[in-house]
Image (cartoon, rainbow, N blue to C red; front, side, top):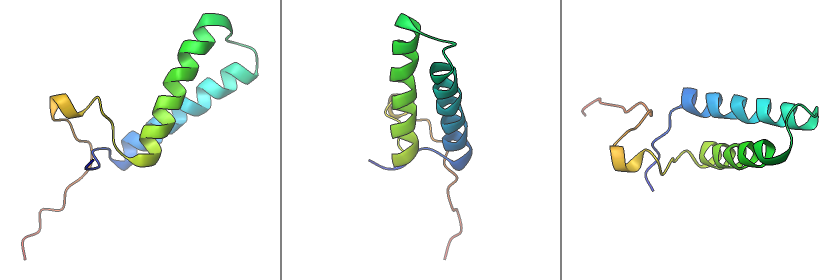
Length: 71
């Protein structure tokens, strides 16, 4: 598992997690929508913490900056 998420990607995902949590705990979302968004929030939280997104792999996407200095 080579990390494929950059800092901005991680921050955006964590902000989305926070927004979903605020909406849930303030009672703005409930029922099926809350369950689906809760699953999305957990997935975003886990991928942000480990820095690897399995969805990016088949498409070869990486938002992580690479150091291209040659020594």
